[in-house]
Amino acid sequence: MRALPLLLLATLLAAAPASADSFVGATGGLMIPLGDSKSDNTGWSDQVSSSPKIGVRAGAIGESNVGGMFSVDWTPISNNYKTPGVDVSTHRFRIQAHVLFEKHFAPKLTFSARMGGGIDIAHASADAAIGALQFHASDTDVGWAFEAAGGVWFRLGDMDIGGELALPFGGHSHRASSTSDVTIDYTSYDVDLLFGVRLRS
Image 1 (tube, rainbow, N blue to C red):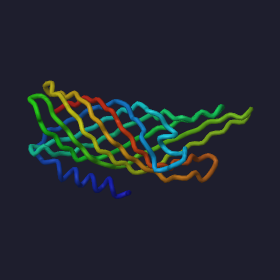
Image 2 (image 1 turned 90 degrees about the vertical axis):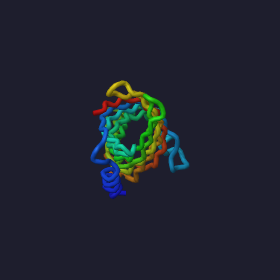
Image 3 (image 1 turned 180 degrees about the vertical axis):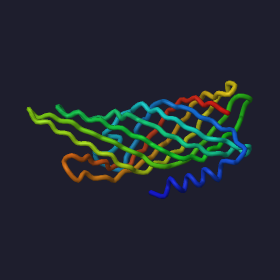
Image 4 (image 1 turned 90 degrees about the horizontal axis):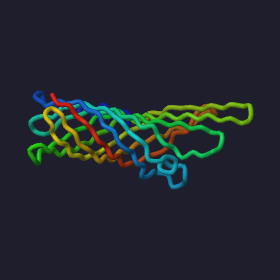
């Protein structure tokens, strides 16, 4: 899995031609957890709820309607921990490279599809108080990320506005080695509802 980002980078560079329509953009929306590889209540979809998600991206599309894109996004996870006296905070960052396809199907409307992968960075911290005693644990793990998405964009001059339906996957296999660490061990399946703006040049 460590070689996946390099493989996708090579694919992206091969797909993006020298003469291209480049863009930068921002997205925001909702991450909806769907499932996990675990059958008990310790899985991703058992431990987290729908959460906001924001991101930035940059890419280019060639005359063949094929190109590449880099994306970075952040999700402040809404977790389901309800233990009295315990405060848990979780965040997820994803850095990915994508192969991108676009097709105009009306004068100002464009359909887009993308597929890519990279790294999924999960951070979790927990603070607990038992009487006068204070406890703190935190950990960060780098796992794998994969994502497929489709969307529709409306052209307004040099700007596109639109939305996407994305299916992100991610995996971690980190086990806590001490009381100050946090176990981050899951394979996640989500649906993202995203809205965005792109500036073309």
